[in-house]
Image 1 (cartoon, rainbow, N blue to C red):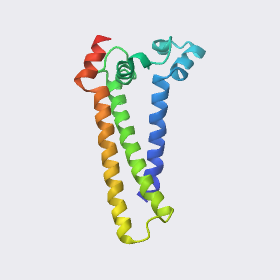
Image 2 (image 1 turned 180 degrees about the horizontal axis):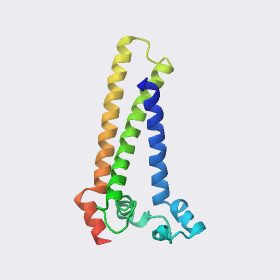
Image 3 (image 1 turned 135 degrees about the horizontal axis):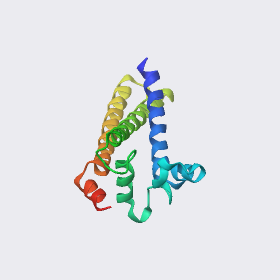
Image 4 (image 1 turned 90 degrees about the vertical axis):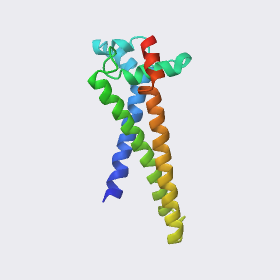
Length: 154
């Protein structure tokens, strides 16, 4: 049963993950919503989205560490938001690895039980590697000393 519901749930998590990135960091997200509604809660988005290509790392750190409240990275909602982003990364890693496994089975690329077992191990390693790399990137943008320092300088 998990093989049906887990990919569907992780697909929704990945869509939410992408939507949060888009809404916070890009001008077509919350900046556009602010321009249409002039809602006071979105005043940080008056000029544009929070991502600026000339200072990509610092603007991404700023966007991810202040998802809810621009005042403090330690604000409870910001911490929850940062950990939800980590969950999105893990969901994406699972979804890719599971998709590689399921796709190979569906397309009948794996004819023997031995090849299926080998591909299962490869997909497991792929999922762990993606989750590890994504977790390191998440750490660099949220909790690493350089990220905190960059946030303090801004």
